Image (cartoon, rainbow, N blue to C red; front, side, top):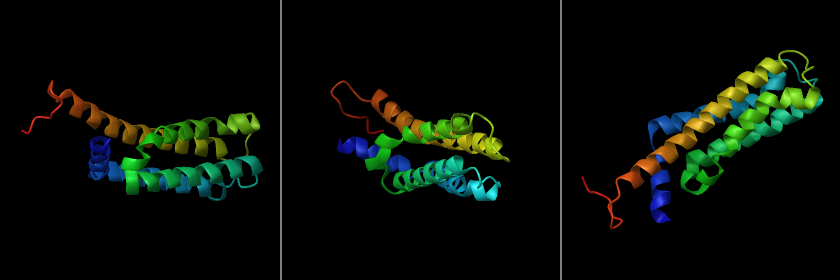
Length: 143
């Protein structure tokens, strides 16, 4: 367990991973304020949806950036929120959404899903590579 946490903490210290966390955080903040920026704040239910899911993505990104060893189990949530963001205009309004809401949600949803998948994949990929180098007796090579 300690080795797994150590791996995730090392992954979180990589510059690329930190950049992905930053992009995810920014995407979450943008999603939260997008109804007012893109001009569809009058779309009540979608406005609330974007505000809540955007803040959730931003909070997840902060958790990943500050304590990925303890929060990595939630990494799958971010891409799912991204997919939800893409389909929310159709689910909430049947596709008849005012203004640029549909384009906004599709673009931001793709952004959130991709950064979330990339971050989760980096952590999982590094963990799998580490396992593939393990010896039969369970120790890792030193070189």
